[in-house]
Image (tube, rainbow, N blue to C red; front, side, top):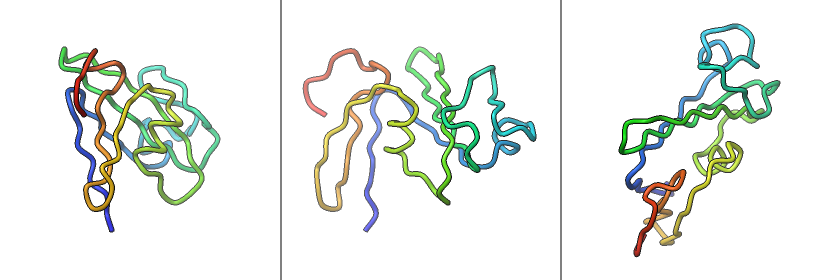
Amino acid sequence: MRKHVMWVSATLALALGTGAACGGSSNPSTATQGTSCVNASAAHHAYVVIEHASATTVQKCVGFSADTIDGQSSMVESGLKYQSQDFGGSLGKAVCQIDNEPMHYDKC
């Protein structure tokens, strides 16, 4: 069963691949725009990209050794703050806040 994730206010994009595919370099510890990578020596890398409503972006690189990594693990490893709510069953989790956007919310 797949879990669905609903994103609010800020948009999250994940790019998965090797260091060469993500950073445009054959060195897996090199990340784009001068960002360092958490667990840079890992075989694979995911980039967590947040685009705020103001059009500013935040990019974090996360290295991982398994064949895949899910969105929640990527967020946790990136160190970015986020709030979510689990609706259970086929609804899964909803992200209520990413990188302090929105500043306040009443309901997720």
